[in-house]
Length: 117
Image 1 (tube, helix red, strand yellow):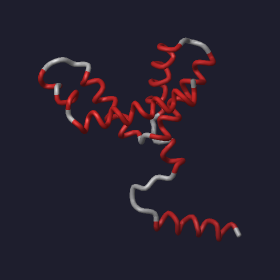
Image 2 (cartoon, one colour):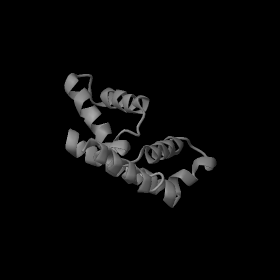
Image 3 (spheres, one colour):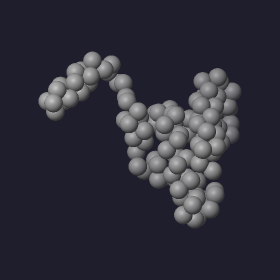
Image 4 (cartoon, helix red, strand yellow):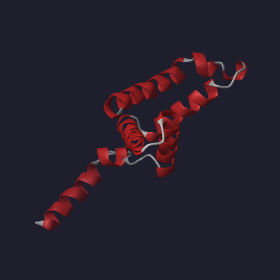
C-alpha cells in the first residue's frame, strides 16, 4: 500500500508543470528573514505585546497565502522607490504596472488586517 502511495506521488510530481507550486510550497516561499522583518515592522507600528506578535505573524502568513514572494518583493521595491523624489522615480508613481503591483500588495494587507487584527 505504501509503495502505491509513493508511486502516485512520484507520478503526480512528474506530470506537474514546471514551476508549479502547491499551497504548502506557496505558503513557505517567504524566507524566514523576510517574515521576521515584516513582523518587527508590524510590531513597531502596533505595539510590543505578545498579542500583537501573534497578530503580526498571522498577517504575514495571510499575505504569503495570497501573494507569491517574488511579487511581494517587487511591490515592496516599488513602494520604496515611490518614497524617493525626483524625475527618475516618477514612473514608479504613475505607470500602470507598478501601481498594479502595489495595489495587489495593499489588497493582501487589507485581507490580513481583516483576518488578524
